[in-house]
Length: 104
Image (cartoon, rainbow, N blue to C red; front, side, top):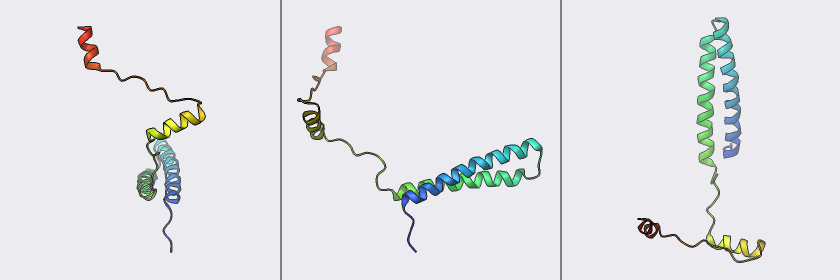
């Protein structure tokens, strides 16, 4: 049997997360009515949120890179010259030490 992909595990975690909110509603309703099912609703609440967190962690460890890669300055220059019709404008560097000496 094949291991599920990272995105599949994350979808399952999302379902557990939604079930956790359903369990929360049942728990609050059981508390409001003074039902004897409060303990079972509380166990379901804790269990579903625990499973959701565990599945989110397992799924995110299987996904290679969820964040965007850093942009290389050369790519920015190429984009600006290709799509913005000109050379990139780079602001001059500011020497903060010099500006504080002049102000004093």
